[in-house]
Image 1 (cartoon, rainbow, N blue to C red):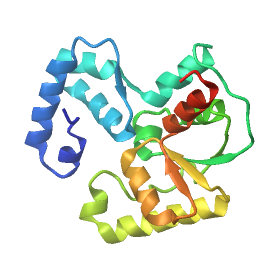
Image 2: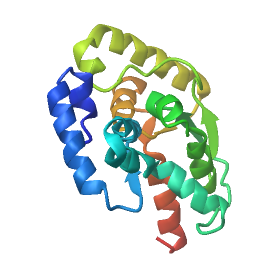
Image 3: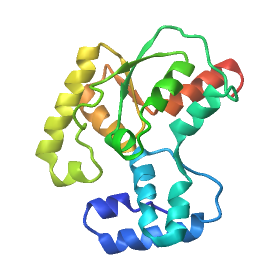
Amino acid sequence: TCCGALAAHAGYASDAEDMAMRNIDAMGDADVIVADVAGCGAHLRTYQRHGEAGRLVASKVVDVNDLVARAIEDGRLPVFESHGSLVGVQDPCHLEHGLRSHTAVDVVVTAAGFVPVPIDRGGLCCGAAGSYQLEHPEMASELGRRKAAAVSASGVSLVASANAGCEMQLRRFVGGGVGVVHPIELYAEALDRSGRG
Protein backbone atom coordinates (compact mmCIF):
# COMPACT_ATOMS: atom_id res chain seq x y z
CA THR A 1 0.00 0.00 0.00
CA CYS A 2 0.94 3.66 -0.14
CA CYS A 3 3.26 4.90 2.61
CA GLY A 4 0.87 7.77 3.40
CA ALA A 5 3.29 10.64 2.77
CA LEU A 6 1.08 12.51 0.31
CA ALA A 7 -1.96 12.11 2.55
CA ALA A 8 0.05 13.46 5.49
CA HIS A 9 1.38 16.41 3.45
CA ALA A 10 -2.14 17.27 2.30
CA GLY A 11 -3.47 17.31 5.86
CA TYR A 12 -5.34 13.99 5.73
CA ALA A 13 -3.84 12.83 9.00
CA SER A 14 -6.42 10.13 9.66
CA ASP A 15 -5.88 8.55 6.23
CA ALA A 16 -2.11 8.74 6.66
CA GLU A 17 -2.34 7.08 10.07
CA ASP A 18 -4.56 4.30 8.68
CA MET A 19 -2.01 3.65 5.93
CA ALA A 20 0.81 3.63 8.46
CA MET A 21 -0.93 1.08 10.66
CA ARG A 22 -1.71 -1.20 7.70
CA ASN A 23 1.90 -0.96 6.54
CA ILE A 24 3.28 -1.67 10.00
CA ASP A 25 1.15 -4.82 10.12
CA ALA A 26 2.14 -5.86 6.59
CA MET A 27 5.86 -5.06 6.89
CA GLY A 28 6.60 -6.15 10.43
CA ASP A 29 8.14 -9.49 9.45
CA ALA A 30 10.30 -8.09 6.63
CA ASP A 31 14.06 -8.26 6.99
CA VAL A 32 14.59 -5.08 4.95
CA ILE A 33 12.16 -2.52 3.56
CA VAL A 34 13.59 -0.96 0.40
CA ALA A 35 12.22 2.38 -0.78
CA ASP A 36 12.93 3.57 -4.31
CA VAL A 37 11.37 7.00 -3.71
CA ALA A 38 13.18 9.17 -1.16
CA GLY A 39 9.98 10.84 0.07
CA CYS A 40 8.40 7.45 0.77
CA GLY A 41 11.49 6.18 2.57
CA ALA A 42 11.61 9.29 4.75
CA HIS A 43 7.92 8.93 5.58
CA LEU A 44 8.27 5.22 6.39
CA ARG A 45 10.93 6.22 8.93
CA THR A 46 8.34 8.39 10.72
CA TYR A 47 6.50 5.20 11.65
CA GLN A 48 8.79 5.06 14.68
CA ARG A 49 6.19 7.15 16.50
CA HIS A 50 3.81 4.14 16.44
CA GLY A 51 5.18 2.17 19.37
CA GLU A 52 7.52 -0.79 19.25
CA ALA A 53 6.06 -2.27 16.04
CA GLY A 54 6.44 1.09 14.28
CA ARG A 55 10.00 1.52 15.54
CA LEU A 56 10.85 -1.95 14.25
CA VAL A 57 9.49 -1.19 10.77
CA ALA A 58 11.17 2.24 10.65
CA SER A 59 14.52 0.69 11.58
CA LYS A 60 14.34 -1.64 8.55
CA VAL A 61 13.79 1.09 5.94
CA VAL A 62 16.66 1.65 3.52
CA ASP A 63 16.79 3.73 0.37
CA VAL A 64 17.53 1.63 -2.72
CA ASN A 65 20.56 3.84 -3.50
CA ASP A 66 22.02 3.08 -0.06
CA LEU A 67 21.42 -0.63 -0.54
CA VAL A 68 23.07 -0.70 -3.96
CA ALA A 69 25.92 1.61 -2.87
CA ARG A 70 26.75 -0.70 0.03
CA ALA A 71 26.79 -3.71 -2.30
CA ILE A 72 29.09 -1.80 -4.68
CA GLU A 73 31.41 -0.69 -1.89
CA ASP A 74 31.78 -4.18 -0.44
CA GLY A 75 32.31 -5.80 -3.85
CA ARG A 76 29.02 -7.67 -4.23
CA LEU A 77 28.13 -5.51 -7.23
CA PRO A 78 30.56 -4.43 -9.96
CA VAL A 79 32.01 -1.01 -10.70
CA PHE A 80 32.01 -0.25 -14.43
CA GLU A 81 34.77 1.61 -16.22
CA SER A 82 34.13 5.32 -16.51
CA HIS A 83 33.21 6.53 -19.97
CA GLY A 84 33.55 10.13 -18.77
CA SER A 85 29.95 11.17 -19.40
CA LEU A 86 28.67 13.71 -16.91
CA VAL A 87 25.44 13.17 -14.98
CA GLY A 88 23.94 15.88 -12.84
CA VAL A 89 22.92 14.68 -9.39
CA GLN A 90 19.94 16.47 -7.89
CA ASP A 91 19.67 15.64 -4.20
CA PRO A 92 16.03 15.30 -3.18
CA CYS A 93 15.36 17.08 0.12
CA HIS A 94 13.91 13.87 1.57
CA LEU A 95 17.06 11.95 0.68
CA GLU A 96 19.48 14.60 1.90
CA HIS A 97 17.68 15.74 5.05
CA GLY A 98 15.15 13.00 5.82
CA LEU A 99 17.25 9.90 5.11
CA ARG A 100 20.69 11.58 5.31
CA SER A 101 21.97 9.44 2.47
CA HIS A 102 22.43 11.63 -0.59
CA THR A 103 26.08 10.61 -1.12
CA ALA A 104 24.93 7.08 -2.00
CA VAL A 105 23.65 8.43 -5.32
CA ASP A 106 27.19 9.57 -6.20
CA VAL A 107 28.46 6.03 -5.53
CA VAL A 108 25.75 4.49 -7.74
CA VAL A 109 26.27 6.98 -10.59
CA THR A 110 30.06 6.56 -10.47
CA ALA A 111 29.80 2.77 -10.42
CA ALA A 112 27.55 2.95 -13.50
CA GLY A 113 30.48 4.57 -15.35
CA PHE A 114 29.41 8.21 -15.13
CA VAL A 115 30.97 11.27 -13.52
CA PRO A 116 28.54 12.77 -10.98
CA VAL A 117 28.10 16.55 -11.06
CA PRO A 118 26.32 17.94 -7.98
CA ILE A 119 23.43 20.23 -8.90
CA ASP A 120 22.94 22.93 -6.30
CA ARG A 121 23.99 20.55 -3.48
CA GLY A 122 22.58 21.79 -0.20
CA GLY A 123 20.64 24.44 -2.10
CA LEU A 124 17.03 25.03 -2.88
CA CYS A 125 14.26 22.47 -3.07
CA CYS A 126 13.17 21.77 -6.66
CA GLY A 127 9.63 22.75 -5.68
CA ALA A 128 7.97 19.34 -5.92
CA ALA A 129 7.85 18.69 -2.16
CA GLY A 130 5.11 16.09 -2.19
CA SER A 131 1.78 17.82 -2.71
CA TYR A 132 3.34 21.30 -2.36
CA GLN A 133 3.54 21.65 -6.14
CA LEU A 134 -0.24 21.19 -6.32
CA GLU A 135 -1.13 23.39 -3.35
CA HIS A 136 1.32 26.22 -4.12
CA PRO A 137 1.87 26.08 -7.88
CA GLU A 138 3.33 29.58 -8.26
CA MET A 139 6.05 29.09 -5.64
CA ALA A 140 6.69 25.50 -6.77
CA SER A 141 7.13 26.76 -10.34
CA GLU A 142 9.56 29.46 -9.23
CA LEU A 143 11.62 26.87 -7.34
CA GLY A 144 11.45 24.55 -10.35
CA ARG A 145 12.75 27.29 -12.65
CA ARG A 146 15.61 28.04 -10.25
CA LYS A 147 16.57 24.37 -10.06
CA ALA A 148 16.38 24.13 -13.87
CA ALA A 149 18.71 27.14 -14.11
CA ALA A 150 21.21 25.30 -11.87
CA VAL A 151 20.95 22.25 -14.15
CA SER A 152 21.51 24.43 -17.21
CA ALA A 153 24.51 26.15 -15.60
CA SER A 154 26.11 22.76 -14.91
CA GLY A 155 26.17 21.91 -18.62
CA VAL A 156 24.93 18.33 -18.15
CA SER A 157 22.54 16.66 -20.58
CA LEU A 158 21.32 14.07 -18.06
CA VAL A 159 20.18 14.46 -14.44
CA ALA A 160 19.65 11.72 -11.85
CA SER A 161 17.23 12.21 -8.96
CA ALA A 162 16.16 9.64 -6.36
CA ASN A 163 12.63 10.94 -5.86
CA ALA A 164 9.70 10.58 -8.27
CA GLY A 165 8.28 14.02 -7.44
CA CYS A 166 11.64 15.67 -8.12
CA GLU A 167 11.96 13.73 -11.38
CA MET A 168 8.56 15.02 -12.54
CA GLN A 169 9.38 18.58 -11.50
CA LEU A 170 12.75 18.49 -13.25
CA ARG A 171 11.20 17.09 -16.44
CA ARG A 172 8.70 19.93 -16.36
CA PHE A 173 11.34 22.67 -16.15
CA VAL A 174 14.68 21.54 -17.60
CA GLY A 175 13.53 21.34 -21.20
CA GLY A 176 13.79 18.68 -23.85
CA GLY A 177 17.57 18.75 -24.16
CA VAL A 178 18.12 17.29 -20.69
CA GLY A 179 17.10 13.77 -19.70
CA VAL A 180 15.94 12.94 -16.18
CA VAL A 181 16.34 9.45 -14.67
CA HIS A 182 16.42 7.63 -11.36
CA PRO A 183 20.05 6.76 -10.42
CA ILE A 184 19.21 3.06 -10.25
CA GLU A 185 18.15 3.19 -13.91
CA LEU A 186 21.70 4.18 -14.83
CA TYR A 187 23.18 1.32 -12.84
CA ALA A 188 20.64 -1.19 -14.22
CA GLU A 189 21.48 -0.12 -17.78
CA ALA A 190 25.21 -0.58 -17.05
CA LEU A 191 24.49 -4.08 -15.74
CA ASP A 192 22.45 -4.86 -18.87
CA ARG A 193 25.19 -3.61 -21.21
CA SER A 194 27.73 -5.77 -19.40
CA GLY A 195 25.57 -8.88 -19.74
CA ARG A 196 25.24 -9.15 -15.95
CA GLY A 197 21.74 -7.72 -15.73
